[in-house]
Amino acid sequence: MIIERIALWCGEVGLTEAQFTERIRLAAVEGQFPANRLVPISTNDPVAGLVRALAVRTAGSIPLLGDERWDAHVWAQLRMHAGQDTIRSDTGWAAFSSGSTGSPRLILRSEASWSSSFAAVTELMQLQSTDAVYLPAPLSSSLSLFSVAHARAVGAAIVLPISHGFDPADLTHATVVHGTPHALRTIVESLENGQTPHRVRLAFVGGAHLDIALRRRAEALGMRVVSYYGAAELSFVAVDTDGLGYLAFPGVEVRINPSAGDAGTGDAGRLTLGELWVRSPYLASGYHASGSHASGSHASGSHASGYNASDGALRHAPGGWASVGDLVEVDSTHRLHFRGRLDGAILTGSATVVPEDVEMALRSIDGIEDAVVLGIPNASLGALVAVLIETTPGGATPTARDLRTHARSRFIPSHLPRRWYRTDHLPRTLSGKPDRDAVRRAIDNGEVTRLD
Image (tube, rainbow, N blue to C red; front, side):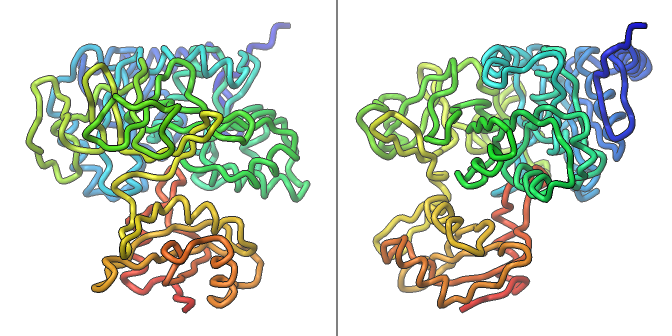
């Protein structure tokens, strides 16, 4: 008797390749999706949502996956504006930016902008058709949506979470995890108690900084860890296979520029710190002009193509170079160390503080699980460096005095946090990234505990 391979798992639900393909075919026939149009999809049934998304793509349209946890008014506005226009025929996929620093924008990209990276990703993951890829982030995340397309191309199975929170049963069939550091931390903590059996051989991690301690904990559980840096607008940019720092992703050219006005002319081998510009076949086409904000406003610079080049972080320079404003430090071995976004730097006194630098050091302090650094307006200095820390579950809450003592051994005076706040759980986007806007609101509204 021949046992057919399972192509999709979600809890106890398992669809064979034939069953999965037939559901997609029927959904495409029944949907009668218009060509070259965005088709909004939001459902609390992940299997139904994925089937519909792939049916839309099969019909030559572009699936636009939302999340049923989104505010109903915001989703209604996004649906309305996304569905008004015919999209360029070379568009294959659409996804929202993470929204970690503002309203999400709708990013459009060609089929080839993802498929051209499949060979490199397959090699890095050593992915085979016998693998099953677990996707803890929602399907509205470009991270998960890419992995769906990639797994289908390779023939690997897809494992969707049972619910929005991690359930150890999710790992029953998984051999690979593709998610954020936050998701990996949750998985590692579950596995370390020894109660969750698993077959996970690889953690493919993106979406935020992966600290070395978490990498080593995952490796101790038998996982190979590959972390990468990317952006929804740029796709893959750099990859770290050993924890020593990022190197340019295969097929990506990188240049570091001392200023945005010198776009595309720097030399990564000579400069220490600057703005990252990349050139690759993986770049998105741009932002959808009428769907770039939940409010539906049209920014100046909209084009008939349906792309809006002037609104959002994505900028282009002659020669095919693009940037979203990342600050990068290059070490003597040409490894890239990401230091945040240009527009996120804190100007305090005469110093410029990059939040990610401070956050990375704070995570090394006992009792701090994670941290978000931001600037609080100050009349004399311009801004004070403030931090909201997420404390380690079950541990003692560190005092402001202890935190300052530890911080003084790690920072020069200009980078020392002047305001300390704590919470049990940092606000996060649905994909697991710290939600910096929500952190600021929580501090402004007195919703978190001030330690000093």
